[in-house]
Image (cartoon, rainbow, N blue to C red; front, side, top):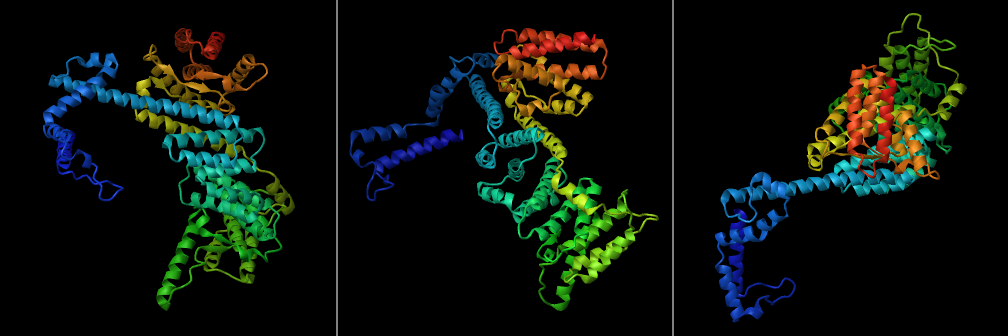
Length: 594
């Protein structure tokens, strides 16, 4: 009732202004909007009309002119459920019910619009990225545009980008364009970063800077799937820095190899980490290495000793400044000399990692070389001294004779081979996690409860791809049963099977989709026109998992009943040709298994 009270007060205030002719023009000085109404009969009638308005009259006016009309626009089923008579809304109980109907109807319409918006946005983003070659500029344009929309749209875009890059990488290799696209998506770069990313492709310094940005993010966050992707991207940028041929390559090479050693050790590739350390320690020329130092803030927490060293140095600098009563320069507080830190990592990795190689040298020899390098270095930081003390106190295992491999062979292996299988796996996993988050957020908002749509559970697809058939069976069975609860009104989510999604499927269904696309248009084997409902795909996953888990035939008979019901429900749908083929395919699999 506050709205009614405020409205009445404002109308009475307007009447007073009309009487006193005091409504100043906003743009023109000494000009009153009500000058023409002064001493006129129209002004008196208007003032009297406004002053006579009461709260009761205004409430009745609202009911007749707004609520009554809104109720007529509501679906009749909602009015019938609440027992509201749209012709008589003067009863208090009836009026309360009518208002509840209008509010609920508006909420339902808003939720439906949200669900429809998401479905349309998902289909548009996926088809656009699949049909067009995704470039860095286009990716940054999408990021800037989607920053103004709902977070669900942003997560969905990132998921499709991950699937798109994973598909492109499996078809050929990880190109510089796709590398920059992934970095922009993970770091959410802006349009101003385009030039720097493009220039980084030809500069070891800028490629190293791109890797440093990713390492800084990784060092300050937990090991989620996205963080593991960023580690793989940092490796790729460091390898690209090694491929660049510019004037500062010797200095960049040593620093890039040290960072690569840390990252490979972080991901459990210990032998590769040792090889990168060896490339630095066996290098003959370190004259330019003083121009770059290892930044402690970029190092992920691979072990406690590095964190302890940095913490002790900061404490040492603080105590020294307090004792000398002066401000100390803190530029070298959290940095290491590149060559010395490579020796520290090599000794550390060799002392805790079992390694079998062709020739042999002892860990004591490596520590001896480390000591000679420390004594002959022109500049040594406090961090370097503390790191050597930690390494020198390492226990040398008995008969532990460990070595580095041939430098020429290792360098050729490091510079020319880039294993992207781990990155592709992480991209697919992260994309499924993003799509699952989108699904959960929309379900939590009850958007799909009004449109009777069960969104796809991509975790079931990914579980099947990874061979987790029991998990896939549980998830797909849950989706099928949820859709069969109200089979007469439920709408199954239609999935556009683009190459980005086909990579999550097995050979059987992928081949079937290819044949359907070929039959649909023999001149164009593109699968973009192939759409399959989530119900049909869930039944396929159920059947495949039951067969692989060797379930009894009684279990498959229940699934076969679901297939027959689904075929009957979608028989009248004109655009369900592909669903009929998939369901027929599932039926044949069950009958063949029997």
